Amino acid sequence: MAFSCLMPTSILCVCLGNICRSPAAEAVLAQKIAIAGMSIEVDSAGTGDWHIGHAPDSRMQKHAKARGYNLAKMVARQVIPDDFYRFDIIMAMDSNNLANLQKMAVQLPAIDPNGQPQARLVLFSEEDPNYCGQSVPDPYYGTAENFEQVLDQIESSADAWINAWHC
Ligand code: 4NP
Image (cartoon, rainbow, N blue to C red; front, side, top):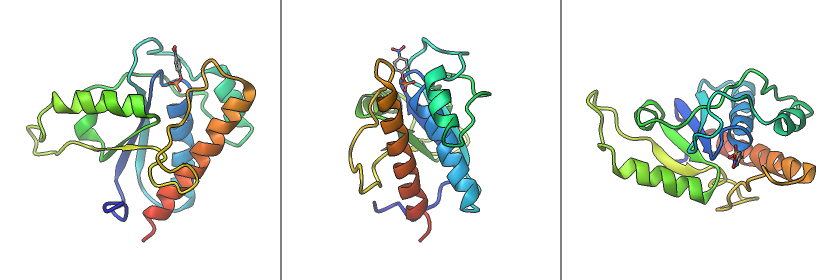
């Protein structure tokens, strides 16, 4: 919470496959940032490599489109070491991915050769009073209702971040 008033200039949303939760989080955050008149770069990536080069999951595309988010042009990629210096904040969608990002971070220099410090690692719902401290659940083997619940949580937590940066 102590850093919440510092508006970042760049954010990376991270899940496991980069085909369900993090592309949705990228699109939702980007839209809410634009509506708020803020200038923040948003991207997404996965800790896993199974879906590199794939479009977002068709179920997530469908559910997101119904809420006005177009994921069609996104392409999945894996987190790389450079991401830890390229982004101000890396937002993990769940505690497993946060733990994996923390393991990657400790293997990397605290500051890169250009003097850039490592990104702050957080949970996507960290600032959200409605879902405080909760992971965004993996919907991959779930139902249509699970995809809707994931989008409800992502929209709520994106609003919470925007509110936190409005001070
Ligand atoms: P995501 O969902 O991490 O939200 O993109 C998943 C996508 C694929 C798999 C697991 C989760 N998978 O096991 O292939």
